[in-house]
Image (cartoon, rainbow over all chains, first blue to last red; front, top):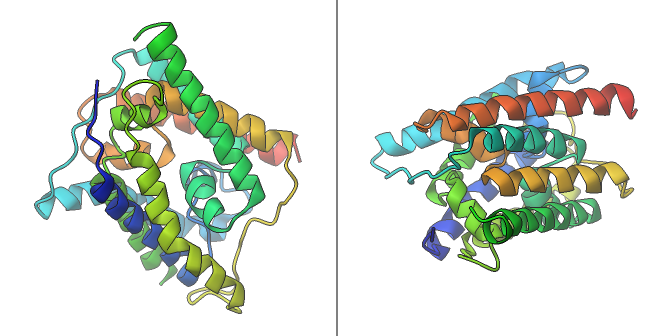
Length: 144
Length: 140
């Protein structure tokens, strides 16, 4: 199924995400890495002092679409695979891989690339490549 | 104040994902579908974010400390370990399979109807917990 190419709303959304990273960086001195935030909430170990702002961050993340719709914004349509087994396995891989690799699309993709980090450039190339290959396989080789 | 800034950052991030429709798995998968129904939108999201954030990351180098706390905690590793490449590769496979990554998987929960989104969040949490334990106690 086709989705419309939306350069302007994508740029605007990207700018908002950029400002989120700026707020955490300049004010809190931290990286906006969502897999890192979530994994530290799940198993705080020696980062308990970070817990309050990290929980607040997650609350904001969940509340945002809701507030957006209250303010009159139209929430985007959602389409996810009907195959629950595939979705469950995908979640496991996303969770395990992003934490093992030290970041996801936010930490490596946005913050890491903004810092011109070599590690993040490699990580981003790695997940972009396997992501594209996976979609190619499920859509064009095994059909979908 | 740090808690308030955390909340603000979460709100901005979630709003960005919503405006850009990155909470829609189909749109993300179409970005990855370079040889099919390619939708380059996601590149504009990353581009927009990097464009505004880049000068501030430069500025942070010149600041002695952040506004609301004692010190900057930036990633310090520079070595390209196997863990970085393999972990990211595994993440990419899951990202391609479902079209969801951690941010959207959380943000979408306030309005998603399909229980698959909750299932994804749950198994993602299990995967994160396991990898965090591996990072903390096995590979250290």
